[in-house]
Amino acid sequence: MSSRFRRMVLSLALISLVGCSPSGANSSGIVAEGVIFSVEYQMEGGRTGGFTRINNSKAVPGHNGSWNVDAYGKLTRDFLIITRPQSRDMGPELIPVHRLISVQFGDGGIKQVKENQAAPPN
Image (cartoon, rainbow, N blue to C red; front, side):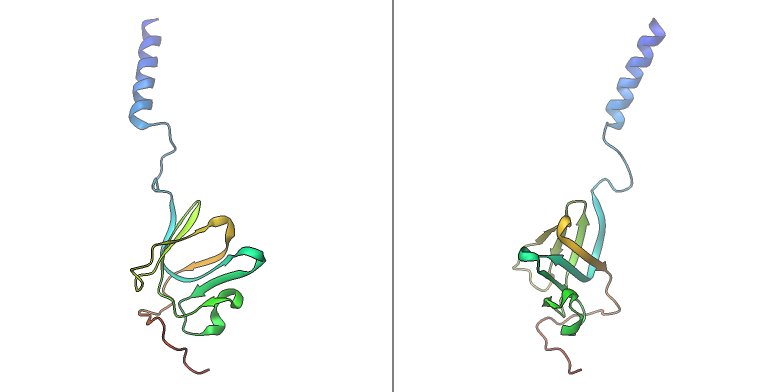
């Protein structure tokens, strides 16, 4: 009986040290993060919106949104959290993952974005 009691106490001690939640390399819940190349999401009424880093209006996902946008994102299991480094007065934009159609991370070779600049002629 004594060894059974010891095993139970040892098991409880291990559970309290390790914890009951699943562990892993990514305990923060962030699935992906970095510079956003493009994003498209569903809006009200079935429309889609989005933006791209490319300075070309025809490159906007869903053809409804902004181009030449400098944005940084963190994708969690629940939201895409978007911040705009060049618009520090704006808070983060949250898009629920169930509304996401596509998101691409990476700079696409575009190292610097000058927002509000007219697109070059095609």
